[in-house]
Amino acid sequence: MTLRQILDVLWKRWWIIVAVTMIALLTAFAYLQIRTVTYQSQAVIRLSDVVSEGAVTGKVGGVAVDVGLEAAASSAVMDPAAEQTGDDPDTLRAAVSGQVDDSSALARVMITATGSTPSESQARAAALASSYSAYVDAQMASALTTLQQRQTEAIQTAQTLQQTVKDNPGDSIAATNLATALSKMTSINLAIESVNDAGAATAVVANPLPGESTVPSTVIVLLLALATGLIVGIAAALIRDQFDNRLRGEDEIEAIADTRSLGELNWDRGVSSMKPPLPVSRNERTDLSERLRTLRSTLQVFLPPREAVVVITSVEPGDGKSFVSANLAMAWARAGKSVILVGGDLRRPDLGRYFDDAADGEGLSDILQEHEVGEPLEPRAVDARLNTTRYRRLRLLPAGAEPPDPADLLAHPVLRDVVMHLRGLADIVIIDSPPAMGMADAALLALQSDGAVVISSIRRTDRVMLADAVAALRAAGAEVIGVVANRGRRKLPKTYSAYYVSARSTEPTTPRPETADVAPGTVEELRRLLNTSSETASPHNGTPDRASRNAEARAAVSGAERKSPSDAS
Image (tube, rainbow, N blue to C red; front, side):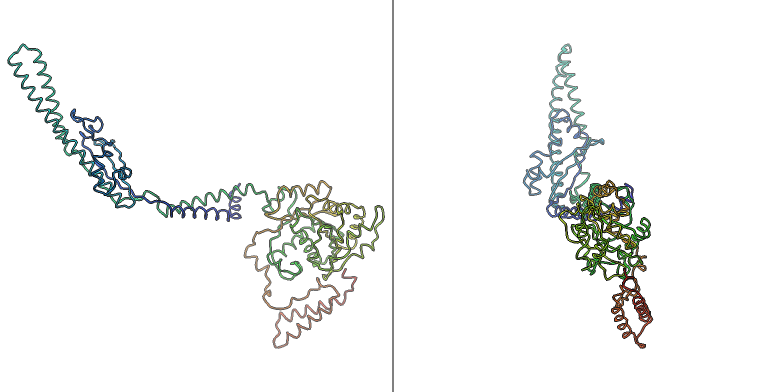
């Protein structure tokens, strides 16, 4: 995926990112409410070289000492420290730890203590450091006393052996013992000197400070949760997009179905409130109505200029095929073409929502049922079922009564004759067909036409089903003109609003009649509108706009009166 495609996916699935991020933040907030916050403080004690050696060897000048890190956890150290802090020795032992740093010449013992408050951790670290220092000092003092005692004993032993050698110069054993005693006395003296020269056994080089929190701060936790939520949300959106097999836009149609895209029709919330839902029949300029007119212009390239037949089908029910059929018929009628709209959906006819009573009564199914195989078509049977609508140049052939076997009925050879007769009656014949998936109806109707238009729904139509629908029509021998992507959500730039919104759309005036859309039978209605407009536009309160509308209304009346009922067909 390119960077642009990734950004498009993230923009379309922003709600996944927001949802995952909110879950991460709520989880972090819950964690902040239940977590236990502890504080940590540390004291650093420097040991003399003699003590450092004794901590490793366990001896100072040959005297056994216990000054290692293990001694800090002994009762001799913990009990005095617990008395200072008021803690139980076991509680204090669990709250402290130690570490020896021997990277420098003099070893250092780092004592770390934890607590529920900064001051508690500081007090524990200070108490343990003080107790450990006192314990080490006591151990070294005891070792020095022992060495001094051994020194005295060694001196006495050497003096005695020296007297013996003096009295008996030939006594080799006494001479050897004297040499040993003198060597021992020398080593003891050196040990005493090293202890004395080493100075203080311990020194606190870093007093404990008020403890710092051992857990991340609230801000850090929330920032981490936010970052984690965004990362996981973005990953979830991309993964969801990869497994989403629905149509995403018109730019995918050619690659999926190996056919051209005829455009994208945007979703318009206002259509649901229209009675009837025919945005093309109105003078209001909207994005949807302009796109429907663009679709009409596109189809004109692929259809004959006269006596053309096009089938409008869809991938699945609910894709909007009847809506597109009705509005395309209306758009061609407004463009000056004579149009016949055929209710080819014998299973679930839906044109009544758009043309009321004109879509009721006998129709295509009745024509097909009353003609036997091999019996020639009676043109009057078709003409009698054609209903006029209140829109000029637009007639309708209803679907008729629902037959028990629609597919078998549409396979009737007389269907070809019906379509051929309708071609001669209009510039364009539009057949509203059932969905192409799973039914042969659409293919049977498309075989009698100049091509089929397949309606799909963005974010609803499965890509595999779209490809299968187009392939099924082609396999039956039908010509597929292209695919229309319905219910798009792509917004036009704001700079286009001036072209789609009428400057007079906010005026509470009666919509002006247009001769291109009104049948001759409505002359009286035009006159009534003209009279109403004339009364409201007096010389004192009239405006140029009203005057213009009056002139247009008079032209509509004049044009309508000159047309005969035969012209309207």
